[in-house]
Length: 284
Image 1 (cartoon, rainbow, N blue to C red):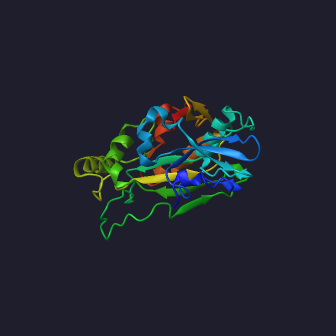
Image 2: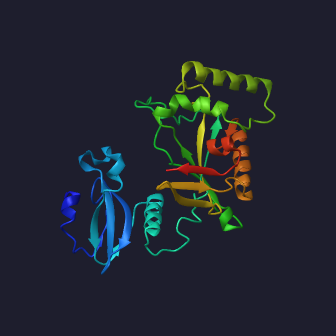
Image 3: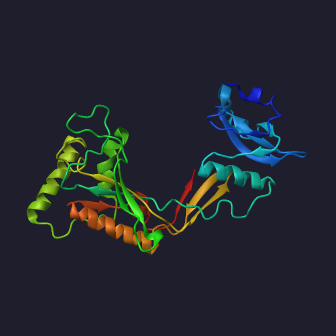
């Protein structure tokens, strides 16, 4: 594989693509129109520990000349970041870049302390009779709705071993949890014992609340409310009005009923619950 400085010798290419799969340790920063033909692609090279010089690393850039085309395939967020930075530096572009972005209506939620074992907590050496297995191998398909945008699917998730001991404290402390209705005294006692057992004996105890916790991954439709901008030359992703649509409220109600049917406590998306349906903003 050629190093980036060798790439500079090949300026007659009709298109150029700098990705991890093409040229390792190259981070595209922006694209400019070439004065005569094609485009100039400016990139930071991470090799030889150049990133140690933070004060000049993002400004002391290398470049290649694409004679005809540039195909930007850096993923949804990184591609938009490159395009926004290129626009700031004069590349002609639509004003809609970075706007109306979607999170695919994705929802992360939990069914905590169910009646049945789930075994969704990853571990290096699973027990033969309680395998963890891969995540997203099953699906509840609810796409057949009167309105196509009301359709959704539910898939199962798993928790990596590194987060195993942090899961129960998070589920216990998040606000807005909805416990099963009409539980008998014996059921309440059993669920309390299961919670205490996980705290004392750990998340892998088969009769504990954590071993009986299901991770829900819901894919649906949202209102394209996300906006990606640059702040301090870093991408900032902002979701406006998270959880305010009737569709998301309907999904939450459905998941509550589903979880309570299985005797568990429904715990909503950590960000949704903690931020009380306010806008979410994150510097990437």
